Amino acid sequence: MNRPLGTPMGEMEFLGWLGQAEPGEALVYHRGFLAVDRHWAEGGALDRLAARVAWAAERGLADLLQRRHGPEDLSYLAIARRHTTSLSRLIGSETP
Image 1 (cartoon, rainbow, N blue to C red):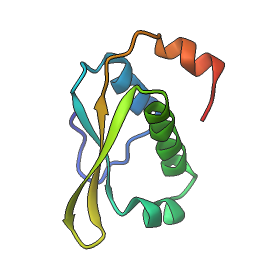
Image 2: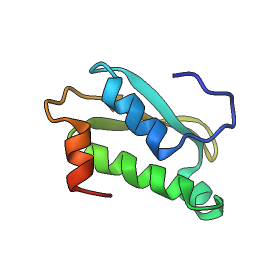
Image 3: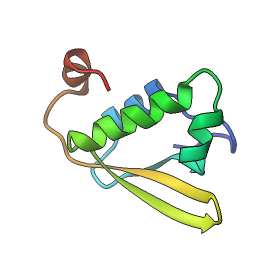
C-alpha cells in the first residue's frame, strides 16, 4: 500500500488493508518513534491506530515488527497472517 510520505494512516485504512492482505504481506503503518508520536499526535488518531494494530496482533491476524533506521526513527510493520474469521465479525463483537 503506497501513501504519500508523512501522511498518517487511519484505523479504517489499516482494517481495509488487513481484510484484503495476503498472508505474509507487509504494511508500514507508522514511521517515527511511536511511543513519543502517540503523545503528540492530535485528535487521538495515532492512538486508535496503534490500539487497533495491537488488537489485530493479539488475535493472531498480524505479526508486528520494527525496523530501525536511526535514533528515534523506526518503521512499524504489520505482517498479515492467514485468518479464517471474518474481520467484520471480529470488529462487530469486540473493540480495542
